Image (cartoon, rainbow, N blue to C red; front, top):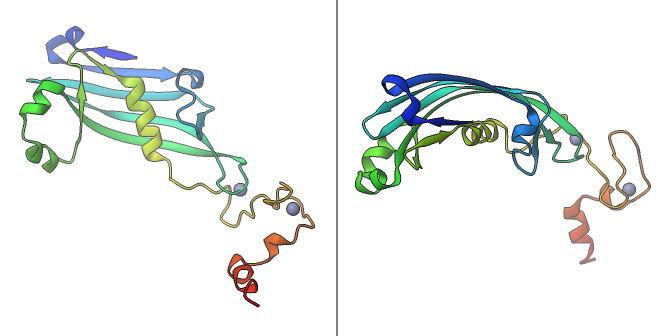
Length: 170
Ligand SMILES: [Zn+2]
Ligand SMILES: [Zn+2]
């Protein structure tokens, strides 16, 4: 969904949209959506600047970093963004902009891409590291067995890599 600024009455307007997962998938190589995404917000024009604020809600599916099992995580993100056109950005004082706590993005001056905002907010909200559970044992690097549900006879994972390194010297 894109918001065309020329269609805004009085320079402002509200928006609300529900995306089906397939409209945004894949969010990136490790994030997929399995439930609809709702986004709500308002847009306000002020001179050459556009302010967009709102809320994104969904559940995202990511892979456990150790065993690759899918993990569902809730996403509840508030956002407040500021857009200016490339020409205005070049002529403005970058120092003054960075004092503000908002994220400033450059846009074409005509429309705001809500799909991009939603994807970005989902990625910002998700942790960089995800485990299906705190003590996930992961997958055996030798035979691929999920060590949470099974055992294998490969010995290398039982040796602490630090000791393995030492062993070479004896
Ligand atoms: Zn896991
Ligand atoms: Zn194994």
